[in-house]
Length: 331
Image (tube, rainbow, N blue to C red; front, top):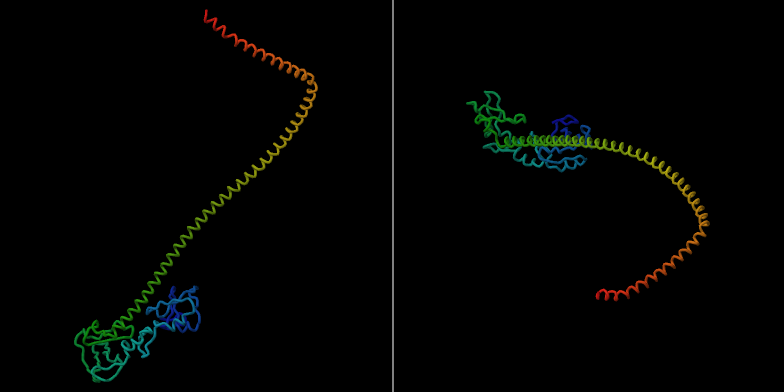
């Protein structure tokens, strides 16, 4: 896959978690910092994510991780076409690498393991060259099932062929492991893409929900603003009416105060006149009042005499009452 900066094919690619843009490790090392991508500073994922590394960073600590990560992809030192994780390099060199040292069947000659596999043929007259005790064995094909065929991993520059077995039965351990590893890497990439799509979908859904909630809140705030404006208008009208009432009350209080002052002055004038007339009458009626006082004393004395007379009369009538009762009984 090409680098987004230098456009060179590389397997040491740091990928953006959102836009999927990539930058190779040499370019990232030269830049010394994470350049903004798509005008947004996004996180980048370790090149070892294809082998299961989950490291993601937005800071400049990628160099320390890359030096210590066991999942980063590396090439085989024996110049084969395999790309494996750093932790699997030893196993690859011992059991998987087609260029690992191996012995020919029935021979002590040490050659690369890929030379032990059958040669490839492309036409109907192709012959299979099989190294067997340093001797060429030539056989012509006899049926269609033994026609040399291309392996499904041909795009990865791996070809196998056989005169004796169909393609489904001719894959050995090395080819099977190689295909399984390719399938695993592809599945990891697809899983990463699916997770990215799911995350982007969730983020998009959350953004839509947040936008809808924001629109609802804006509508509610607008309604509240309308109600506040209506209440402000009502309050202004009430304040205007209150000011008018205050003005009228002040005017009425002023009028009442003037009326009360006028009534008070009239009352004071009347009281002064009455007091003057009363003084004049008092001087005129003083002899009459003296006569009335003397008459009152006379009447009081007469009442005393009358009361004493009535007491005496009632006593006499009490003493006379027993004789009258005896006379009445005799009759």
